[in-house]
Length: 73
Image (tube, rainbow, N blue to C red; front, side, top):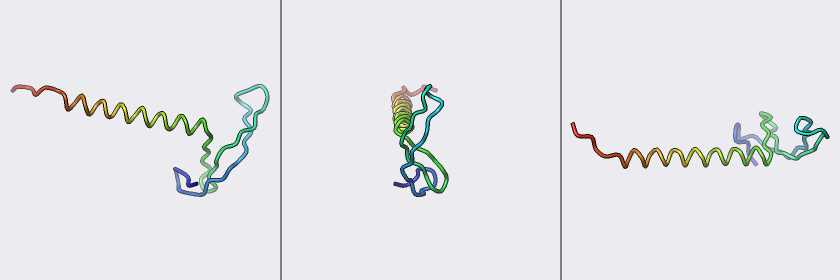
């Protein structure tokens, strides 16, 4: 797998999440060996939903501009 930031090598890594719960929780994520970018399933889900939302907003803006009536001078 390639990193989205630098196209470096991503490897599976085990991370310790101490902030979100009272009990430390281990989770698996992908980490880039070159830049240190970390992607876990939640980060991936949020990024893909944001991209989809932006694409819908852009499509809506483009269709509303195309449907505007011509202004008489």
